[in-house]
Image (cartoon, rainbow, N blue to C red; front, top):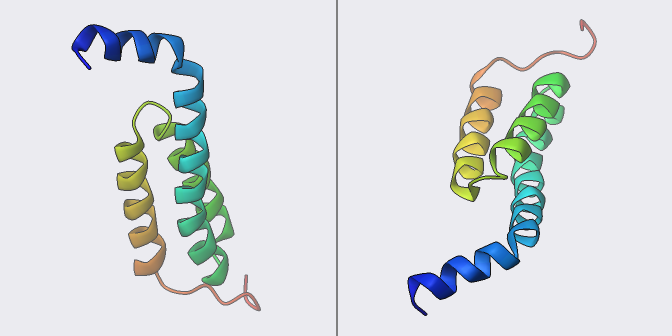
Length: 85
């Protein structure tokens, strides 16, 4: 495949590619959401899910980076006790 064929493929299938990136971003965003719920940081988990899904639409690699950063943020903080919250 040369550059012209690749450009034509993306031009014809751009909606499919963006949709797949969104689905993969939601899957990646579920990782910090899972840890956020387990550690009592549900709001941060949902923010991570939304941000990771949006960021991964143009580039799946940005979604991986966003998911990793939010997972570290959720895991590094102290665990919230649900009885006191």
